[in-house]
Length: 422
Image (cartoon, rainbow, N blue to C red; front, side):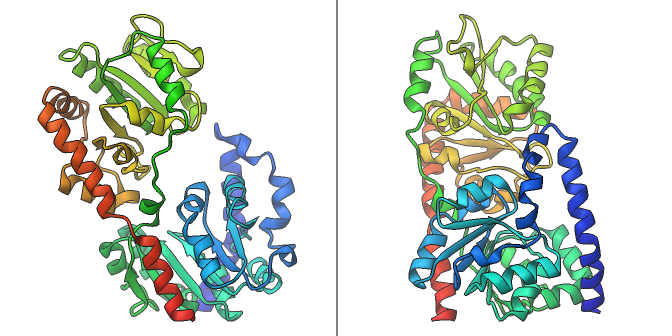
């Protein structure tokens, strides 16, 4: 039954890829598809002979996953005395991967394309990052004798149900998997329920926790920007990596909190700056005075700053009193909940943090982060922290302690992989 399902999947894969491309062409992010024609060869798995033979092949879906293995990938290649090859499904991921070693766009998960790429690249092993479970590629690797490791692996309940429904296909795909290195105990438990993986799972933690590092980049610019305005000395509520659906909740919470803390300022750093106009529309609806970062100075009496530049989020977290991490009040699944903890800042976040479940649960348990679901709840927590110095101090210490306790996944992952290869 596994091979018929693989055949059906292989027939559908090109159509799914085409629909995905069409979606982006019709979306506000259509600029991402400009280079599609030039990328087609790589996406069809052609030209693999340009890859270093015998490489540690690391596949990371996009920019975030490539960054997550920025320590692991070079260290693993060095330990195994092998060259490094990074593949990604996005151009930005490939560009980031090129900083680590040879980098290419990943072949389409279509068996002929994947098998052709593997036969030419001749990798020593395949390391798959997070949730990239591609049946055709995994089977092609298994048939070529390429051992597969799934690192920083996570699996949701809904995905587990789907894979169990397709158990003949997943058993076939996982035939070449040597080990699954899961982010959390719950992820590990779910992977063990999949056909073919029952005795191949261990928990090593989240690689992204090891990658977190406070950056001084932009902090001088941010401080100069604030000092040149009338914001100097005012408490800052920084909402980072936000999505349009979250804007009304954040803005309403800030306006409510200002009734008690009049000098409270809001800094919004959208996940996608190209959608800033949507945030501006919500602010105008609430009659809130705002300006953009690109204006270079905050006009007197302005209460909200919209950051329309990349690379400044950490700099704003560093000067904040309280933070909100976006992608948690919509269906995104959450962004990096621990980033504020780099600067000992408490983080507020919504109930949908499935992409950072371990971090979210640890922050809540240690009281270095707080779950908020509505504007009144968010305003109440902001006020509790800003009007109670002891509460704020304790939350800051707890945030830093939580981050420290979650590090160490890189070393555990390398040890687990090399123990099976050396």
